[in-house]
Length: 134
Image 1 (spheres, rainbow, N blue to C red):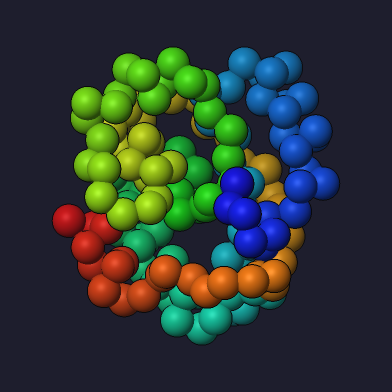
Image 2: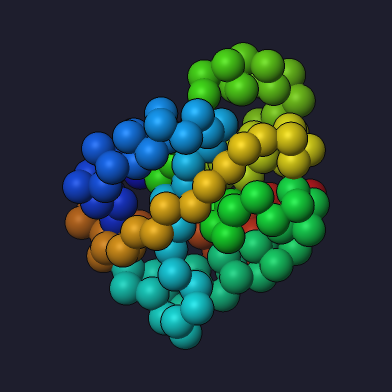
């Protein structure tokens, strides 16, 4: 979960319960990209995310509609197992973990409302989108 409060902590209990009850490997807090704009995302971030998702999801078998999410729960054992396979550059560890596992994981989406950033600024840019895809 990012620390800028764009991800609302109010979802944590429900997400934890679902994650445990359904014995998932990943539960991803997904943003609703069906709308042209998402509260809290600039136009640049919106399109960079959409472009990356469209290229990335075929590589992971569309395990989640938002592999760029920073709000997710996963099993620690997955990190331990996959850490040697991680790309390790950048800041999108969810995408990295899903790709390193080659679509073998039980993953579900949990819709969230994405908020405006309380402080700081996004690192997302077209350059970062290109570098993440390498």
